[in-house]
Amino acid sequence: MKYTSKQTSTDPGKQRLPRTLTIIGLTSALLGSSMITSTPSLLPVKHAEAAISQQTKQADTSYNLFIQRLQKPATLGWARATLVNRIDEFTPAQATLAVLKLENAYNRYWTTAMEQLIEPNLQQAISEISKPGMTMLTAAGQVKKKEHRLILTDLAYMGYKLEVTEGTYHPVVDYKSFKVFNPYIKPDIRDYINIMAAETDQPTSEDAGLIIGWDELLNRTLAMEKFLNTYSSSNRRMLMQEWYDRGQMYVFHGIENTPLFEYGTLTIDPEAKKAYQKILDSKTNAQIQNSKLLIYLQEYLKLIEQSGGKKSTEITQFLKQYSL
Image (cartoon, rainbow, N blue to C red; front, top):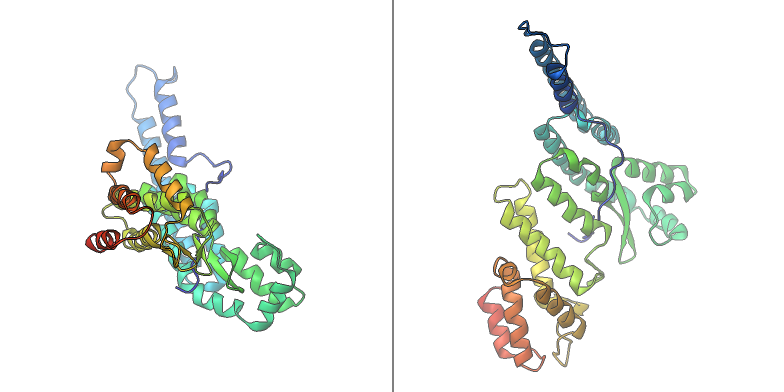
C-alpha cells in the first residue's frame, strides 16, 4: 500500500464489571450466606440460570445492534460507539468477532475516506493549519469551509486518525483506540492490536526511510515473530506474516533512504550494529535459540565483524541462503 502507517498502551479507563462476574459473585454470596437454611432449595440456582439467560439475551441484543450499525458507512461511527459502550455485555467470542468486523469495516471504507481527503482544496486547507501531531478532530475544528469540517469530523468519529506521507494527508485506522477492547477479547487479537497500535502510533518508515531506531525496529519485528510462533491459527496470522516479512527485510537490509550498509563504502551503519548487538547481549541463549530472527542476526553480525564491518561476498551468500 502506498500509505503505510503504524497504529503503546493506554489506560482504557474505568470499565464496568462484566455482568457474568456480577452474577457469579451474587450467586456465590447467596449460597454462602446465612440466608440459605438447611432446607434444600433450588431457588438460587433457578435465579442464577434466569440471570444468565437474561445476560445472554442482552449480549445478543447488543451484538446485533452493533452489526446493524456496522452495515452502512453513515452509521460506522455509531457502531464504534456501540462497541465501546456495550462490549462488556458481549461474550469473549462476540467481542473478538466484533472487533475484527470493525477493523474490516474501516479497511473497506478506507478507499472512500482517502478519496474524500485527497481532494486538492481540502489538502490545501489542512496544510494551512497543520501542526505536528494534529488530530483529525483538531483539523476539523480549524478548517474554514463547512464541507471540509464535516468530512474531517465524520472520519474522526468513525475512528480514523490523520497522517501525512510525502506531503499528502491521509486517513489511518487508529489502532491505539482499539486498546480499550483488550480486556474483553481473545489473546491473539489483543496482541495483534498492540502490535498494530505501536505501528500506527509511530510508523516504522516514511518517505522511504526509517523513522524509528534500529532497536525499536528489531523489537517490533521480534514481537511479530512471537505472534506467529504463538498463534498458529489466528484470524490475523496471514496479515501478521506480511508485516513480519517486511520487518525482517528492514532488519537485514534497511530501507532505501536508511540502508543498513552505507552506499558507496558498503560499511554497516554503526548505530544499527550497536543496537542489534545490545539486544542480542540482553537475551539468554535459550531466548536466542527460540527465535530464528535472533539466530540469523547473531550469525549475521559475526560475518560482518569478520569482514571488518563491510558487506562481503560471504554476507551476500548468507542472505541468499536463508532468503533474508
